[in-house]
Length: 402
Ligand code: PMP
Image (cartoon, rainbow, N blue to C red; front, side):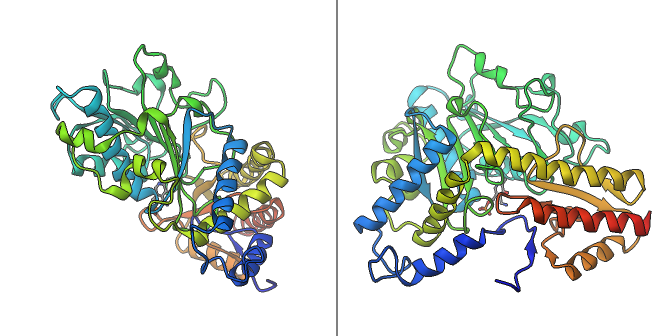
């Protein structure tokens, strides 16, 4: 492992070395079965026990109440862009069989590239109308960028939506809802005070288990791809309230779109996430990561560490701004703990910054191809010492250029 670099990539991203070492053993011989984890049956009692331990680990650490099921599937975040729409429209159809597609509204909060994509998929699938609750670009500094969380009074929720959708952390744009009580950049949870049950859906792909989830019990669905904080790509984790696990075939008889069998939450729930062969290896590595997290003190520990890590990077970013070397891309209050995005001022300055980082053994810092710039991803596996190394380098760069 000596030749490993510090990987600040946005996902797939760094995993803890101790987990990778343990997984290497498991690839050869899983729990003394004499078979590797990628070779053993998903119906074996050893694997089933492992899966159920993973589930209870998530339940304990995130404090998931018994009203919610934890389900495992494949297809990533993008798969859920579709699955959320299909399952929630089926649910809405069962509740309101008389309503037409025109009267069926899906509320999308658009604060970045991923929620925008999710809204596009909802539009593509049809079966209801997409209401853009708010588009944060309208509140940005330049009128074009996803650089903020709009004020609560800008959110235009519809009367009785099939669901309300938001993305907690926008990985590409580095914009995240604040968890500080009273922050203007928090999610407007006041919407939950309505008399009717509000089905709230959240994409937590790039912030899952980096800190506790506020109002978790009030969500209809929370989902995340594993490939940032939890494990390798190929595993998608769902936390679904029981009333959102519906008989999609009964809904189809009433006119809802048929739901592909493996995308139906009911299929997953009825089969204990084993309707078809699950992604055994990613599940295994995620299980090891979660065991390790539990040992380290769970969400409280990670919340504290991740807060410190982000503060350190934002502090040096501020120093760079004062010196005219860096330019932050996200407005204060809405800045992500997991993905810090900024620009390096000057022609070729970005390349110079990236080259210098690479020479010091730091990689994965290039911003998303759609927006450019620099992106520092600070997922759970990135240690404070590694953050210190980055900060030290950024400070050196400021001194040289400033
Ligand atoms: N949502 C968010 C917030 C993401 O960061 C990503 C991927 N980076 C996705 C959705 C899409 O996930 P996937 O690539 O697993 O389909």
